[in-house]
Image (tube, rainbow, N blue to C red):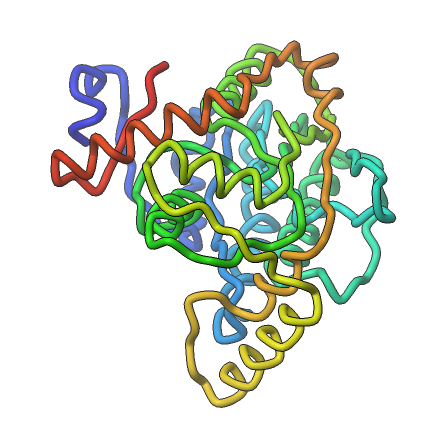
Length: 299
């Protein structure tokens, strides 16, 4: 709440669990637009049931509630994990079809099914925008989600994955929401992706900014398969690892995403990723010197 000092007069706080549709339905009649960004991001087999309950069933219930309460617009956050995988070297777009793959995670499947619920709502008269952000880069709680990359790099990991991934500045994601609330992109799906980087470049750039050892050893597909196999054995024995098998298995994939639709239809302008990595690294170092677990990027 400290981050929102001065905004309290403009915000009406309502506390409700995601599965408490009765409570949520009490508020929806007064809502013009709903931004649904809540989800479970988890790759552990033990969390599979919770993934589908929150990322799929809750979306089903929420869309039904929005239809009943005549909510004008829903902005739904999905994920690049819910988009089909292209052949090697091809850019993945919003139109790349979903297909079954050993690289698909339960998280990705749960988000894909959640998207289908949104499209069902559109077919029944709801206006919606779906966002599929790539790897969101920005400052925050350094022990959760993407920001954990920085403390991991600081530890001086010798190996780096040989794959690549799409990345987007968290501030650009927020800007996309503002543009959609303003009326852009109705009933469209948008990949939010500012750059495609090799993991080696990502880790090396961060390491340089935070004065950490640069990883020098590629994690070959053969070695990665051994690590994934070990992780699966541990999971079968109910042993939790920092990096679950479903998260590890995609690290060799050359996944590159096309964010041009968001630029053309939304009018979104992406920040240079090198600028994002530099600023995020600076906030990380400052938060460490201040003894803070949180950080804020400059607007």
